[in-house]
Image 1 (tube, rainbow, N blue to C red):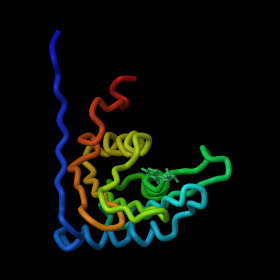
Image 2 (image 1 turned 90 degrees about the vertical axis):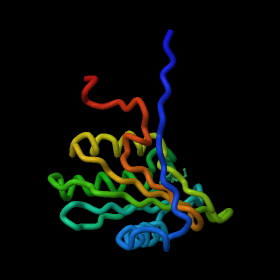
Image 3 (image 1 turned 60 degrees about the vertical axis):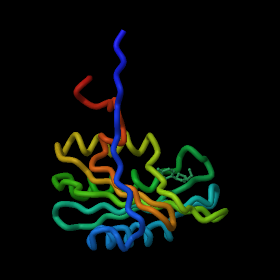
Image 4 (image 1 turned 135 degrees about the vertical axis):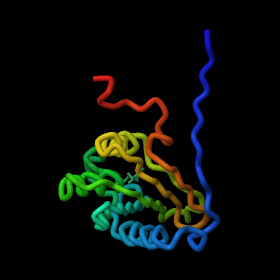
Length: 160
Ligand code: THU
């Protein structure tokens, strides 16, 4: 038997001021999207903003539904829209912020597993890494240099 260790690397920024300017701007767009989230059931508000290589910024927020599983996360709302509108553009980076009405979120909140799988599809498709920045409402911001780094043992078309 052989042990295999899998590592992921994150970079932590102390505050928005420490981020590169264009990333602070993108995170600002994610915050605006978060404020438009439709989350009457969980009261958990998520916003995502994508920068494309054509310089377009696409945003999305979580959209809930009385039939709970019919709702969709912010990240997938944004990435599906981006790929619908601009199928030939690559995604350079994604900024995500999540907040709760119950208590202020103060640590970075990573995308859920289903969203990681969805983002992975486009990272593989475009054959270029997507930078992922994520935060709560306040506090530190985490950066991953790619989606693959957030999803060890990725399931993609290569196994089909
Ligand atoms: N949510 C997102 O929008 N993104 C994630 O990565 C995790 C969860 C949403 C789904 C649901 O509307 C609410 O947050 C609570 O799970």
